[in-house]
Length: 294
Image 1 (cartoon, rainbow, N blue to C red):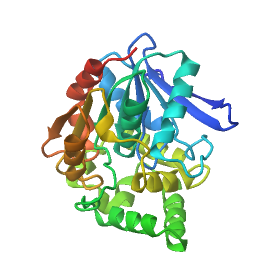
Image 2 (cartoon, rainbow, N blue to C red):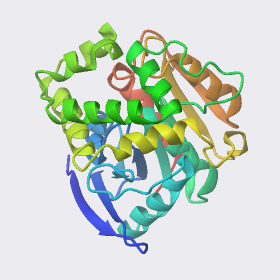
Image 3 (cartoon, helix red, strand yellow):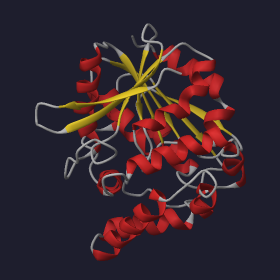
Image 4 (cartoon, rainbow, N blue to C red):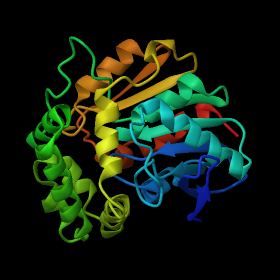
């Protein structure tokens, strides 16, 4: 799988954790991990390498893993860090690919980086838009998380601290139960293999290693101004989503299909937030290849 990571020091003095996986001679895919998480989550995409030759580049978003916090960051701010990582590695054009909370960040690259040839959103979050019931269909845990995120204050901080404490102690044997109602049966089945649960646990533990700020700043970024207009994206975008997803409901995918310029609807009936990747790996890999990038 050839996974490796390193920590860069950026021009503004921040540390940025960068990871790669795959064949460096293959087309470049910049992967934006989910929420909460870290760069090591890129290893969930090993299944895609069974279907296509790709080179994944990723970072731990600011505030996660070994990446320093960027207080008050918006979704759009990820583009600077993506550019820095790609420049360090000498990569030119690329496809932006985001899973879950990474979806909006992939769209930001498609909107604002001329070197991004296209984007793929996998079970990705939609903007908190007027007239759109953003939490409808979410599991109770997520509804409560975002209610507190909107309110802010001590109750929200207490929730973040509790989440960090819980997930720092997660193991492959406990992680499914810790996620509770967030996992429908199809996603529990997707986490059945030990190696899949291990990657999931590693991403959570590494994401919270130095605090809860990455989680906090992601939530706040989703609910605020993203810093770009999805309708202005000029490059092709594949929007993948399933109807058994209780973390990011299918209404988010439908919103993106209806509002992102050039979006192609990739609906996966019966799939959840996690199962969609393994169940549709061959098609997702084909989309990433078709979207281009070197």
